[in-house]
Image 1 (tube, one colour):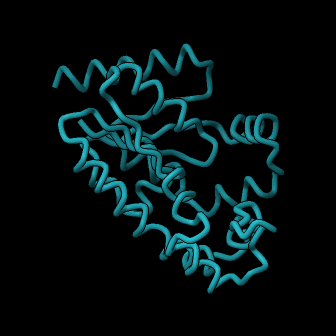
Image 2: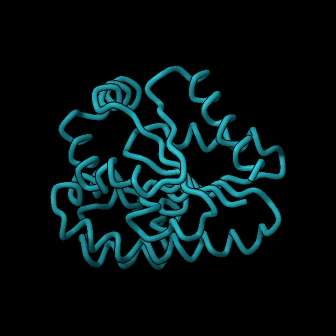
Length: 197
């Protein structure tokens, strides 16, 4: 069973992925696309060099690592640059995810991929689960818990596929506006349905 978990920026995808992992048991594995993308731009990685060639050395920290906050500040203000960055990073992320899927045959895999549908990775999953959240709740959580600025949050949200479109393409939807107990109940119901079929 391969589950693809996606949603809007800050909707609670990773929390939902962890809930499904706990439902699936110890043999289940989360494949975290954000973590793969971060590793791909670490100093010395081939993707890192390509990114520096396009965006210049101004995006580097003193230790030579790419400053992700600085890079994000550039690309989320310019769609063309965002597409250029995606064209470098997405193939690398996809290759690693495919390798992980191959290496973990027989396990329940949970793909935690923010751009699962935008990057055409939905086909890797047996079922796609979209995590939805009201815009106001989304803003509140990202500002209070992560320290993001409202304007930066909106730029990131607007760079993604509209939530309504993601929901239309989903097999299941989890409403993450409530508390964690409510989210767990919804996940457990989906889990039962998956194994009933």
